[in-house]
Amino acid sequence: MERNVLIMIAIPIPFFGFVYLNSENPIFFFEIPQVTEFWEYFGLGMVFTLLIAQYVFFKKETKTIVDSSSELPAKLTSYSKASFKRFGILFVAALVAAAGLLLFGNAGYTIAFAVTLVFFSAAKPSPDRIIRSLKLKGEEKDLVNGLKRRE
Image (tube, rainbow, N blue to C red; front, side):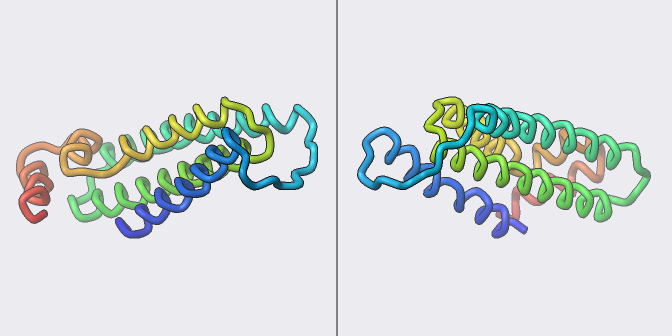
């Protein structure tokens, strides 16, 4: 899973970097069709809606996991699936932000991409985040903390 998450982070960054640098100092000129202003703000709204949705979705999923009476391996599997879905939503948000900057040149898409990167960074699972999110205590907490020592 970690490799897939790294790919989801790595793909939008060079695309956005190219679009951003080309918007600041054009080297390549693309024949981009003119799109109505509605779509510019619709796309920007969609990026921020995706950012809010991934946060709400993840919090809801972790609450469900905490409320369940499953064993630790089942909880970790569910947490892994929820994290992967979260990164999928962030991946789409990053691509929409990069495409929006390419099509419209609106600085709001740059801000949206920066916020998406913050969420990518904050969402990366670590033993401490897993313990905090799943509200683990006692032996379960010690087992997850043991993951730090393996690295």
